[in-house]
Length: 325
Image (cartoon, rainbow, N blue to C red):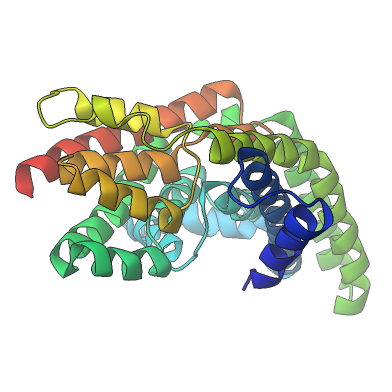
């Protein structure tokens, strides 16, 4: 889907700037160009699409339906399963997260998606089967969905909406005003589009700095941090290997497909499978760039709560994997 963006990034980095493939600066810049274009495009398309939906299904109606109807946690499971079929890394999942919040989806349900989306996707599943077999893949997929489900349920108990930033509240208020006008005046679709388009561009302008800074941090980490640096701390004899692996993974920004070969190397060197999976989950589910992107929509307190709950769930999963496998 994004092959043309990768070709553009390669052309700028290697053909135009004449940087040598494999060098730290070249890899960091290539990563920055690719992810910047991809995430900004995703953000615009998703927000524009959610704007169209919201113009016909107002935010308040969606929120009221989800709050009044007892779905017995099924909405969290559906959000987690939706995360499985979206092939995004943690930063690419943030635009859809913003779209969900704008669409009136409760934060707990939205978090269930945000956790699962980078952890489990069809590309990662295919690689997982080839590298580790069906049994471990099945356990990994179920645990990824369960991790999103449990994290969403836990976070929903904290009533976290009050920790959204004023910018998000302004976006929601603007969306509500536009929807009320559309409904009251029965505005035809053709006349709604310019308003929705303008709102999408306004949201992009509001987050573009955070997106670029976050991806720049990710690019530096991607290009300069050696992947084998932390292996000495993740040995079988270290009882704290799982939490250390999860914490050490945070600077190693990558997607599930990119980190799987590293995980295979760790396992081949004797690192327990549960510790390696915890490392992988930390890499794709928790990252400094993701926190930077989320800062536009969440206060530091909310980011801390979100990362804390996910970290604890990943650590528990790692220990369970080491006991079972």
